[in-house]
Amino acid sequence: MKILVVNAGSSSLKFTFFTMKEEKVLAKGIVERIGLTEPVMKYCRHDNLAIEKKVNVANCVEALKIVCEKLTDPELGVIKSPSEVEAIGHRVVHGGEQMTKPILIDERVKNIIKDCFSLAPLHNPPNYAGIEACEKIFKGVHNVAVFDTAFHQSMSPESYLYAIPYELYTKYGIRRYGFHGTSHSYVARTTAKFLDVPFNKLKLITFHLGNGCSVTAINNGTVVDTSMGMTPLEGLVMGTRCGDIDPAIVIRLVELGMTAKEIDTLLNKKSGLLGVSGIGSSDMRDIISASDEGDKQALRALRMFIGRIVKYAGAYFAELNGADAIVFTGGIGEHSSYVRKLILEKLSCLGIYIDENANEKYKGTPGIISTAESKCKAVVMPTNEELMIARETLSVMLHEIHNPITEKEQKNQ
Image (cartoon, rainbow, N blue to C red; front, side, top):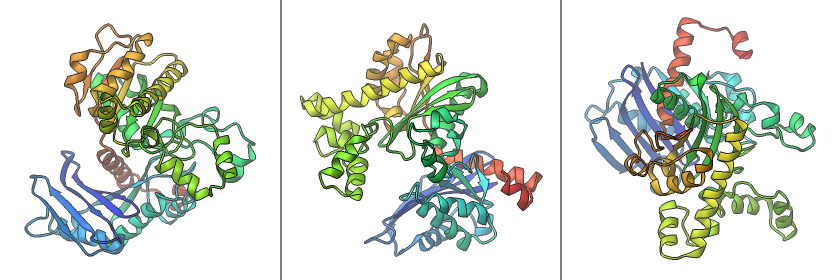
């Protein structure tokens, strides 16, 4: 089966086209600056043929039309007709409480995605636009929604509720949902296969460390806790997000005259490593370089980043009553041996000891970076959210082919 994976953002559309028999990428790319000045399309074929060109696109439908034309181009494409696209998998950030697994998209599912606009105002609207665009360009092709929040829906109420009046949850859905679920699910399952242990027999703590950062505690295949909350703002120190703070800070900022929009921008886009370091960059490589050169604020930002990770690792280790492995993924987690070293040195009290040579060796490739005598393994595992979405889409499609469900059954899922 050939599956197109679509990740539609506010001004971009990322795509990856798979043939699932070999789980091979036939083509991938992105249309950037949609609706802005000088939109650009980047396209790469499986044989490394790559092009980048300016395009004239004002919306998601026009961007997807360009993608379709490129995929079917006689010289540059990988298929002869759009009909060869057998299913489309969509990354959807928020599915609320109703969406606990990937699902075939119908009007009911679309309405649920729309109902979650208020919970993910920057992500769900463009995700929804991507779905509607695919329905117009690839007529008759099944669309499947894969939700970032779905993997975390096994959490107990004790984990996902906040200690605020309960009616705020029942009336407005204010609770912890968790994000990066597709990444956490992929690396957890792939780590289980890598360690040759059944997924439902492992206790894992998975760290997705990039510009956005989150950690998830997984017990025997189900999530018991995760660091991101009602929005992706809660939890670890991130590139530009503050992570955990005293809620009264928001009240104080209001008293100082800031608007809700200004506070939102401050906490989401001007805080984290960027805000603390003061070097004008949220890139961990720049933070490390500046701290090595003696910049005290950059060093402080780095220590805060490491400290929050260690804090969550210890808490989740206790919550799981021990762990079989701690897993690093994401841009920083996969590639920064220095950050991993700083983290693992502080976790030696848990019986995790770093293998210095292995830690330097495994960058962007799977590997165990702890010593043989460690009580808990430390693993580097590259994430692949697009492949996970393609796999989930294939699973839904195969189930639909062999077990077609009625509209009534779909409502009960």
